[in-house]
Image (cartoon, rainbow, N blue to C red; front, side, top):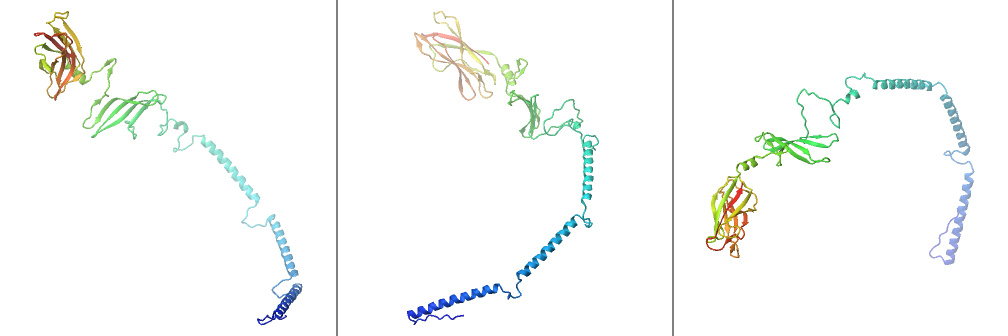
Length: 371
């Protein structure tokens, strides 16, 4: 191995260049020598005991290949032989087992099919033909014939309603439980007023228990017995108190004044009576016209008036002085009542030009009214 001479700091440029070139040359020579020695070693037999030669490795591979081939041959022979131990069934045995099981399964299927169609089921089962005759707890079902109950049947649902329908399932009538509060309960009957859909109309109601029990409540509508409308208690009482009455009055030109009362002031109607209509009959005995000494009847427009059941009740006729028309007066007559707290006007009638404005001219008349 050649020495490599280093270049010193005090070498001249030429001396340093020479040393560097020599060092490069020595290195190249050293590498060439090492490569040649390595090539010579690769082809020699001077490796230590850690390595197998190619010849040895090829021999080992041949031995292993032969051993594997022998083992495969033994396994192939064993597969087709009968030298298996008792842990294994042969194909013939397995095929016999499968055939036996198939036969049992076929027999069981036949027995099951026969059993399904037979009547040999125990008491836990009901035939389909008998099931159709039982009352179902859910779903739609048609039930016919007469049913006999050993005790009173109870119908219970969360809404407390029982709805009846026609053949097309259109609701027609409904029974409904009703609660009024305070422990009072009852039943209400509705009918459906529509041919399609529902619009329930209350037609009957009865209280069943509580402090207000035993009442029959009809809706606030007209009730008929055949073609005849039935009368309510209010209507009967009003008819009992009804009648036709008259309040006479005399109007005189010498005394006529606004809001003057003519006739009785304490004509007292029965409590709860209803004033239905009123008519004036006016007679002028001081004119030389065609109407002299003749009575003229005219309606007095009124609104039906219910007299209160408490307080003072009375009727009176009051006249208001009217306008002058060619020497004639047209007084306005009012039918007034006390409703218990104040005086109210029930009807007003303008008598027309029937009264002479001269002294001592007067009109006698009567207001007829019915209650």
